[in-house]
Length: 261
View (cartoon, rainbow, N blue to C red):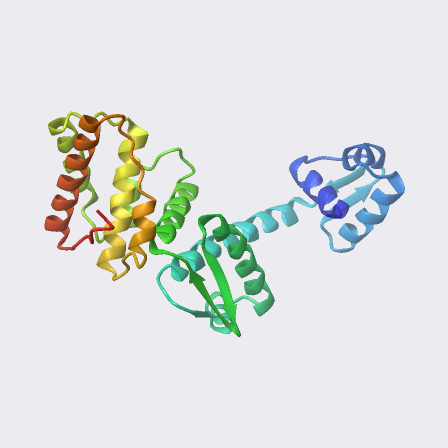
C-alpha cells in the first residue's frame, strides 16, 4: 500500500509542536525536501500549518479542532455499534439526519465499524441504503464487552462502570453473590477474573431482559472452555456457575436457556 506522506507530515507536526525545518522533516518522513515543500503547500493552503523562515509548524487551533472532531466521531461510532447490536436494520440517510452528518461521512464511519466487528466473527452488511449486524448473539456480547473495556481504558471494569452501563440490573447484588459463592465453593478468583465474570453476567442478563438470546446453541456449546484440571475442579466450577445463574434468574426475573448455562 502506498504511503500517504502528506498525512504523515501533518501527523508529525501535530504530535510535535513547534517549528521544524524542511531538512528535518525530509529525514523524518523519508522523502526529499522538495517533496516536503510540495506536501506542505496543500496544508498551508488549508491553514493546517504555518510557514516561516524557521520552517513549518502545526496550526494548534486546527489540531484541537481535528482532535475534537475525531473524538466526536469515535463517540458516534460507539453509539452506532450499540444500536446495531439492538436493531435489525439502520438506514444510512436516517443516520445522517440523526447525527447531522453528510451521507459520505456516515458511510465512512460504517466502513470503519465493518472492519472493527470483523475479528468478532460479525459482519456489518449493506443492503441498499440499509445496514445490519449479522452474527451470533454470543459474538455480539463479546463485541459489547470489548467496547466497554475500550471506553473505560482500563485492564478491568469495576462495579460502578458496569452498573452505569446496565442500569436495569442490580450489579452490586450480583457482585455480592459472586463473592459469597466463591467462598462456599472454595474457588479463588483474582480481580480480573472476578470482574470478567461480573461483566459477562451483566451483559447476558441485560440482553436476555431485552429479548436477545442465543440463536445458535450448538455453536455456543462448542465454545465452552473447561478450565479445571480434574473432576473435582470441574464440579466446583459447575456448582458455582449453576448457583450463580439460579440466583440471577430469581433476582432479575429472567430465564437462561441450557446453552446459556
